[in-house]
Length: 203
Image 1: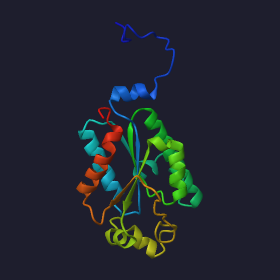
Image 2: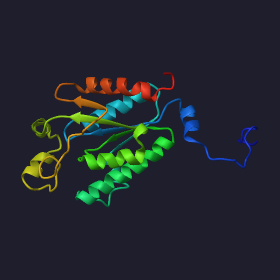
Image 3: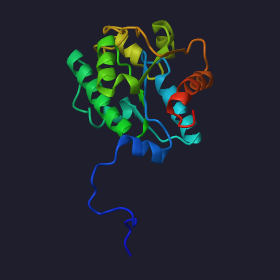
Image 4: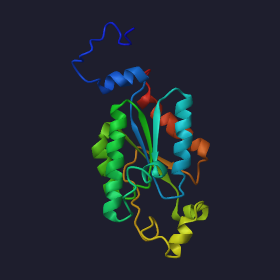
């Protein structure tokens, strides 16, 4: 018995378009790009946000250093050129996910306005939602869950953002989440409420 629906000809006249995939998934694809210092809360928020979106019936993909630096970007270091290439590849992958109809959550330091602008240009301004996860350097150092700041202060980690490599505060993010003032739950709820009208097909 054929698995091809009767109304589908085996020789397709065109590729499936993004709009077709979004209709199937019942959502509008976007990239939610979380930027901020290490320790600001990006990864924790990204994971919680993906869970919230999943529970609400949305199809998502989370990209962060753990699944990018160990995979497609495992040949890159932390020089300025490698950081730029890291973001370029992430943006290109994100664009593919958007074209597949998925909501992509990206959690990356992405330290300069130039690299964030590059990501925005590749993905497309209408599909790019920049969220600045804000916390002071002192707060991030005090958290320092992975001990990275301590190593950077000792000179064991070179070109560490915020210590011997710059971080540009975003100029015009669509949303700023101050994790010194908001809990993780409040942060996620704020982002969720902001993006819901943009990703939902019922609005």
